[in-house]
Length: 145
Image (cartoon, rainbow, N blue to C red; front, side):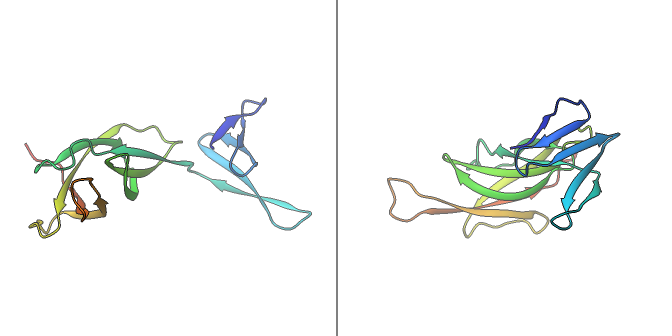
């Protein structure tokens, strides 16, 4: 899934929807079917992708730094392959740097500072316990120096 270059360098083919896109100066022209016989175009100034980012030390009682594309929007948080994962959408037509984002995991019943932003909850089932652990992920402001 994604955009792949066509034979013409300004045309791109979207593998997901089988449309061709013309990219000119960071504007994408997308053909949309208006009826069975006519096509119309709509200018799109962004093309987004969603990538997965991991919390590597999720149960340490301190914030964890994750480098995410600047302006990235967290769309979902899941527990996959024994790690909490953040699914982040960002604009791929703009040049971007990675920014430092800080997250902390809290167990159910823990005291959570009011200034943190809730991201999601996940369940961790282990072989040693019949009941799953329930964890809650929060984003925190970058620390000041």
